[in-house]
Length: 451
Image (cartoon, rainbow, N blue to C red; front, side, top):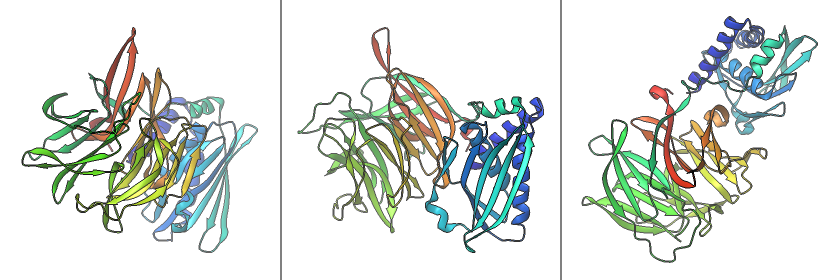
């Protein structure tokens, strides 16, 4: 997916260069990449990353994102270079990078963009981590016209028809808390809609959902009063068959159910809300947190429960975290990659798999988020009437924005999922029109299933 994203950005630069005569920035980056290719020519399997990028020019942070991505796209196809994309964000003229992986690298790159009258220069420093010294310094300079500056500073830098787009939308009954899907025994996708008192299962028929079955959940007290229902659903294929967990902000426990004898049977209760199923030291775990009773935020602990046998609850341990409005885990091949958290001040935080904080963005506002594997992250804005949905590339531990879209209404939840074999994100949105409230469901994915 990273290659496609970078290729799209490269196409955008090439289009701008050919149509508008804006080729200086492209040449600046291309010459820098060419220098790096020559420098590493006789080295095999060299691991490199940009770890610092500063801007002392008239270009905006958006433009710096473009220049960075263009450089990465120039280097990632070199057979002898393994370029790691560690960029998390670019704000206030400085790149923020995931430095937790520096120990794995051979060379570190330091970039600085400098304005010099009518010209813009790019300074490049190569640091050898193994030799513990600077091994090369290079400076490139080109004249960037005002038109090219304006082009680079343009905020929208992704083709919406090739990026994430809304593939499905329909009105749904209120109080929907989560959507998950799994392939049935006949190979068809089953879609589980989680409501406070029941789960409804649908099958896809063309661009519609047709109800297949439903079952009641029957919560017992204590049941806490809540302004808005919130909950998480998780589906697992285990050695004991298909297992479902359901937790929420109005019950003191989550249910674990197994599909046996053609029906869903409750087999266990657990004291936290499961989010993900992952492998740690070859042991499978359910991982999650607890809502504050009746509230829409999570408490400050994350729980890990061994789950090789759904009936076994021994060995639970916990990690300290901040109280969170939203919380999710990026998982690749069952392994924990990172923890994504929005705190009670609606600020985003990124933690490593060891729960060391990698990045905090106090200027960002969010309310909901979901991670799709170790590839994509979707985050909502914080708004009641006009929300916004942001998509980020989170491969290699970074967080690069790739697309955003304004949303009418307030996003209640975001869930990673699948719609007819296309990976993406489900959103539940509360809207008010003419004094009437309605609930909309959308699915956002890559057109034609592109990665």
